[in-house]
Image (cartoon, rainbow, N blue to C red; front, side, top):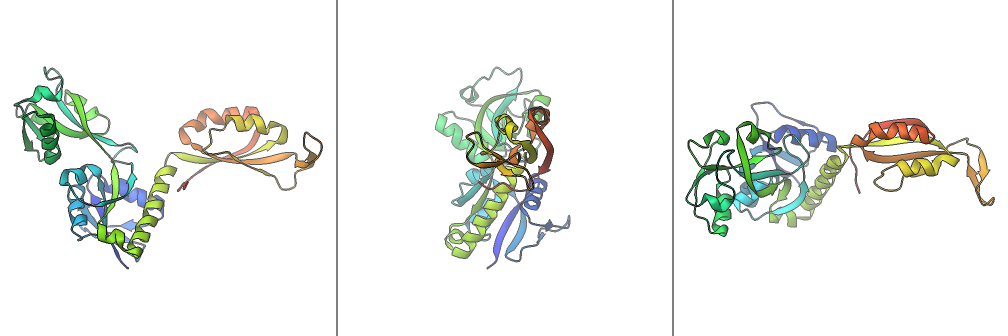
Length: 302
């Protein structure tokens, strides 16, 4: 079994390779090659523009591919979505396709664009969007540098943004978000029906999703005297209840009822959001935790 897998070339390539590395796959490619090497003999990867990916997956030239959901919608491709992978060029958040106009424009809503000219790479979806609204517009394809075309060449643009900063830098104002998109792993229906390929895709989806889940999380280990355990546990914003286990060699005491033997010192382990660590560590120390260790995570599987 060999899974023919399309990987996005262009803006998503670097972040996709980094995600595969965290998931446990080694990818390597020459800057002039479209065929990366991978340390998995069951996967044959190929680099392809995200805009084209879903068409080649749909017709069976590729068994599966990773691309933006926006291009699946744009191409109106009939493919199976194996899983959602929420990451983009810069962040781990969905991107937005928005209608944007000059900041000083009188246009306040999509309906105000009746009879106007709009430039975008997302031509088919934009035409369907305005047709559904019943608003006649002239939609033209943009080869790039779309922000510079208003107001001298077109009245508005439909462009993709992660933060909106590029639009603001070009003195543009967002009128409406018309599509939210994220990265997806897709497969053609024949590949998904094949037992071996489906299992391989399910395994791949699990590992990539686990790597994304671990991206902004860390693990914490610490030692805590038994009497301080409740105070420390209350501070921990865990994914689930923290693991509490006795330390080897700790003294055995009676519990509060005087019936069951209990160690006098415990080890606690927990997974938390990394951004919370700098505020949490001093509080854990004050609550009685000692020997605190922070460590990175590669994968988190629920």
